[in-house]
Image (cartoon, rainbow, N blue to C red):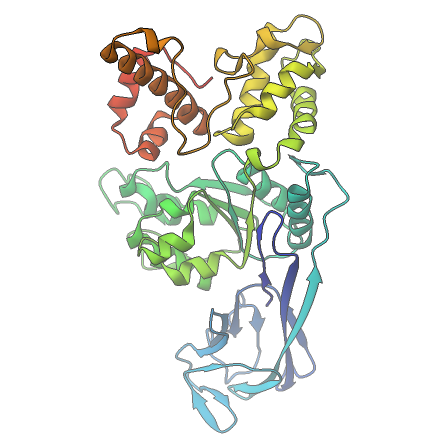
Length: 453
């Protein structure tokens, strides 16, 4: 069992604490064996799918478990026949300290924590799988990802939309021991609320109207590999205890079924909302947050690492499928790109580069190839909360006409930034703007906007 305590909000948090735990069997048929664990839950019993499998006939199939909680490491009896003991006392639950001795049936163990403190130094590399960056912020992220990827630790990746959270999760999977297993993505905010439970955990035939066949959920599909729970902050509150149970027990029960199925998965989750605030507001369970945030990595927004734009551009140009031979960006264009606020982050930047390619003559992206919203040195998007840029010449117009022109300029720029932020997904853009989807589409039609620019 191990835990990495790290919240890496780019240039902060330079220490990673690895808390490992070792179980040593001192009496019983398995005497002399040692187990070292990384996962959050250790299942002890005679069941072959457990983590510590014992041949002691006095041990129940599901005898006990060791669980890492926010308060400490908890030994819990699971209703065993012959009990779990610390010293002479039969216990239901007890916190384990260094070198704690306990007994299940007639088998005795010593629990030993083995902590390791690692200084996080910026990586010497300027990429980590699909992630690219020269900045200190990104190289510190690369260092943390490199350290935790080979483990089975649960990781929470936080960051604004478009910062590369899915890329980071795929990088973790590719650098893990599970790389040959499946990588399954589940977007908690993209599935209708009434289908989320079925999609996550599966369902039995006849469990609900339309369930004509039994089918596994994404946890079963990810067995032996990694599951990526995108936008986990959007998970309905009533389903959060069920997700917590799966994370703790590594078992799922399909909707309408009575049977549980063991799943062997590594969990990586992502969020673009501040989950700590959601916990304080009662919109997200605190115990689920701490189960997901065993390792928490924050990807910085692009506006805070503008020095990465040249390397990002080279990376995007090299991998573009329909690149007619463009290899450079003119200094004038790079200056404009580095003055823009990038509300859609790396995803928006990639869209700008890709859309510029068909309009390039020669090997260089020039000003004429940029979207209209980026052309001209003074057209950078304002930071959040800043007033919209005034439309030119409004001082010569009647008040009402000047006001209408400014409002139209604001609506047009807001829609472009909003849609770029969500990669053109109107439904998600409407939710983020707290607007009706029809209102968004009406404004898009009004301003002739068909896709993010």
